[in-house]
Length: 142
Image (cartoon, rainbow, N blue to C red; front, top):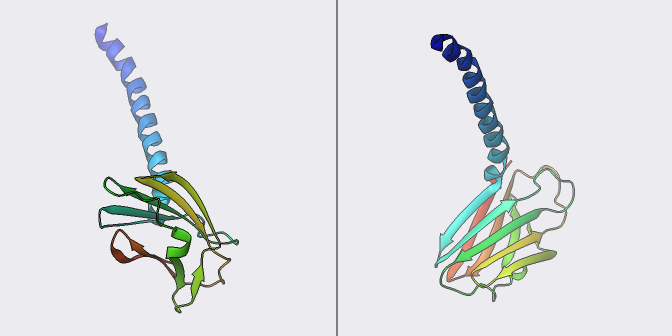
């Protein structure tokens, strides 16, 4: 009799495992799209993580910039002034807006650039003079 109970539980256990596996696969698939748009550069005791928020959008390009450190105050850095977006032809675009959150050792800034021409094959976001690093380059190719 115990053998029949074990046998009847096995399909339920398998079904539960299949359900968990499916949830993990769905979670990995949705999370995998964001890291493909994120670039990171560490130097001078500061880590800068940039995520291209809207590469498919028809409006202005938006980038989330996260500054993180354990040793310096990051409030002095004006990312709108220190950043430039450059296409593969070398044309530069200045940020039109910066939305700032956080202060001190952890800051999050959303940089907004003007609408870009269609057909761009590559974009570089250059951020200058953060924590003694002359230039940090974050690249996206399409």
